[in-house]
Length: 268
Ligand code: DGL
Image (cartoon, rainbow, N blue to C red):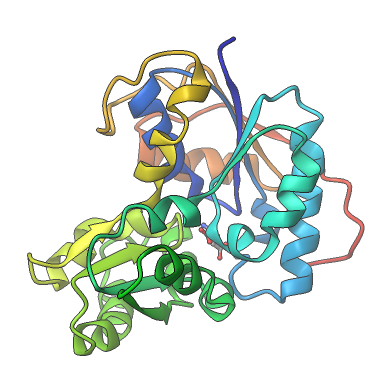
């Protein structure tokens, strides 16, 4: 059986995970859901994040998928149990995958405020890698800047300088990109970091965990250009805006469907 993957995020961030998946397995069937009505997730309360995760998984699991790939660290860190319980199919997460990719003893994590406050990355990495110390930095400005297309602007440089300083002061040897939006800032971050600091993209580890599952051999770990011909894109608001922002990332404007989640709570 060839896998049908359900993948979700608040917005564009899940593309960095989707691209790794398609790079590794070719044009796999993927259903990508971006809860654009409620982006960013990372400054919401734990209760809101768990409600959002429950509503997303309820919708996805009704769509005949055979696995869930969590393309969002914020829900991964605060609602993994909700996602697992609601999915009814295997669930693949980013945080566990990242812990298996760490080899250094001083590690920084850049994450949304909610992920950072949860300490999920610190706990998982330190538990799996005895002797490693994790320094976590919340980056509240990054997701709004990325969603606004500011990948290389002065504002983004300023924010990155501010967020990287405590990690550089702590002399980290690697930095985990603990929000799926952040690999989109990799070129900018690389300009600010010494070459010897490794950037860790958890999506690479996550994809290799799918090898036994997807039913086709892995092609490569590289992000290869893809037609996205088997990916269905769905959003909870502004499909036109999402399609044009996505075009900036993938080179062509995908067809994007507007869907409604069964919302139990009135979250703006
Ligand atoms: N890209 C998601 C994450 O990995 C969500 C970011 C947000 O909406 O704040 O955490």
